[in-house]
Length: 141
Image 1: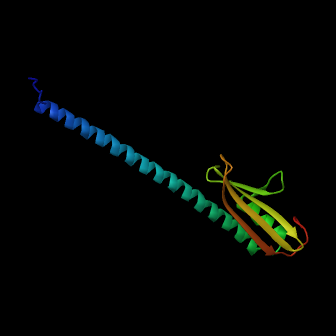
Image 2: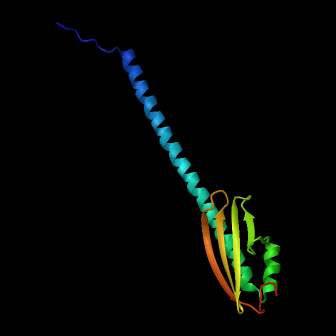
Image 3: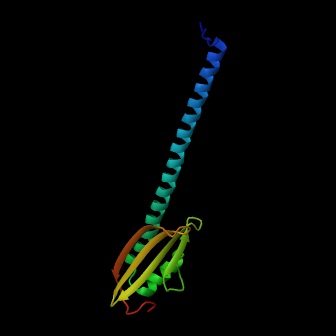
C-alpha cells in the first residue's frame, strides 16, 4: 500500500506566505498601473488647459484692438514673435508646447487661426479661429 505524505505545518505556512507575496506583488502592479495612468491623464489635462488659456489670451488680444498695428504691438508684448513663414509663434510650458498664430487680412476682416501643439510630437492640442473687424488695409499697416 502506498502511503501519502502529509504537508507539515511549516510547509503549509511557507505555501501560504508564497500566495500572500504573489497577491501583494499583483496588487502593487495594479496600483502602480493606476497611478501611472492617472499621471498621464493629469499631464494631458494640464497641456489642454494651458493650450486653451494661451489661445484665448491671444484671441482676446485680437478682439480688443482696433488696428492691425496695435494687434502686432500687443502680440509682441505677449511674447509672440514672427517666424520665417510670417506667422506668430510662442513657446510655453518650459518649451514643451508651441502656439502658432496665422493671421490674414481680407479687406478689414482680420482672421487669426491659433494652433497649439506639442513640440516633441507635433500633435495638435487645441485650435481656435478668431475674426475681428479692424481699421487699416494691410497687415503691418
